[in-house]
Length: 114
Image (cartoon, rainbow, N blue to C red; front, top):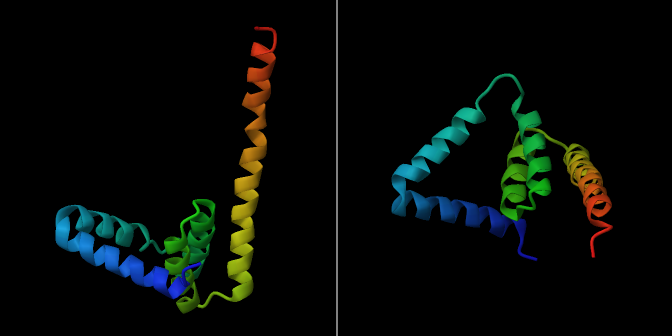
């Protein structure tokens, strides 16, 4: 597995390259991200813990590296970050469990066709 420090460097590199090759689009995205993360409604540490959970749920190694680094700098503890990870597991597992509902519906509807 690639080190998380290398993943963080890759985030910086792709951001640099996109800023050079697609400056308008990249600036728009980075501005949106800055504005979305500037709310005072949640402290930075809480936002980063949420971002860690979302990074795990979306299976983005680069996002995990980026947001863990930010969470550490915002004062998050190892236990808090691991707890955020478990929340992602709950939300990945629970929704998959509930997708059995349409599966059962389809099985029931099509079971008699041959």
